[in-house]
Length: 221
Image (cartoon, rainbow, N blue to C red; front, side, top):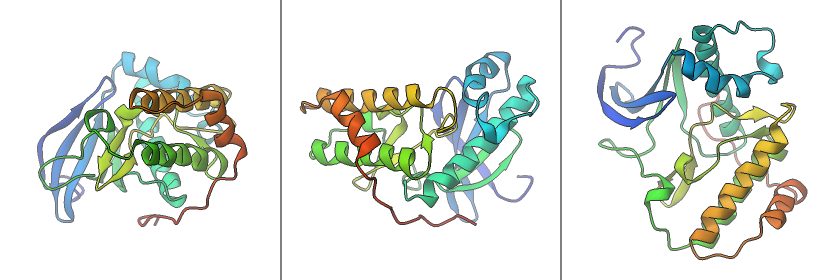
């Protein structure tokens, strides 16, 4: 396709209100191609995560431009996550409302979402997820803002985080509200899977316990 990154779009692997994701074939292996819708409805759902983010202040707010801004925002958030060792797909390229990333999975299919798998080591997975939230908050100064088992892929025994476009910086006026929501959803997942975890204690851990400095992941150029 134009630009040389994608050879073929093969089949859809995820459908959402804001975007569809397709499996693609490239010269560098399989990829995930995320194509965002450009409707007014999408504009309304995205704006609360962009307004208040100082990285995107003063930009145009017409809905088509906003979607293009959103794609650049997700690209920057992916790079920021990888810089701080959070396993997220490696971004490859973007053009207007299209984002190309490495496919988390094998050549034929993406990795399953955490909500669709049964893990044996729930306590270890919960600990890792809470560590990711803490690293994002303390080291990357980001809040995912939609952290749940729907946006975590289970790949080779490790949780991978996806859909980081809505992640906001700490300076965003709603960042603390989003942080509480992320921790609450993670605790709810753990409790549904046999643990007994307190939300307030987990939130204090994220905010107060020093987060580890994780090794940066490749692809930061």
